[in-house]
Length: 212
Image 1 (spheres, rainbow, N blue to C red):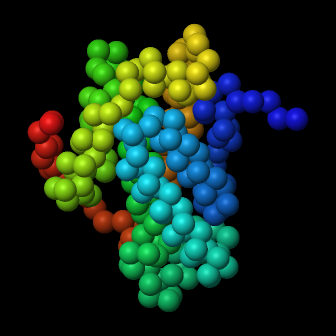
Image 2 (image 1 turned 120 degrees about the vertical axis):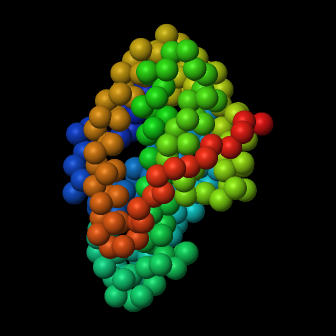
């Protein structure tokens, strides 16, 4: 019988390799855990949860259609079929999945190093460094409004410990370990997207919208 996870981060395999995550089943399991992370934080990450869920479906549908077992195989087959730039393609699904995960990881990077900032400001800062450059004005405003709904830090960490008290240090340590292990793996996925001409070079200068 499997032990219940101590923290949310126990759901992820330790010491992941890029090769492992590029297996479609592993990638979809990873993405499913990101959905769970969003659900734990409620309305603040509702848009991210919806986005990730939709992109999981795109990737899954594409891999079923083309009988692909790896991300690269899916990208190759969609390019050969000339559907890789379609909005409903697995390639575009992978692109937006990666961008959303980048936001989530950036929140985890900034939280332990920002003792004087609240979760709203941390979330908005992470968004400004990641997803915002890919969004139009309407989406920017929607995300900025949503990120204002983050709980306070204590509640945020408590939820990642499944409401077990006095777990803040353990959660933060697990969070740092997760970032250290998975950030580089995510960069490998981004490099593959560039290789297959799915990811473009982001603009350098972005204007941050005014907080409501």
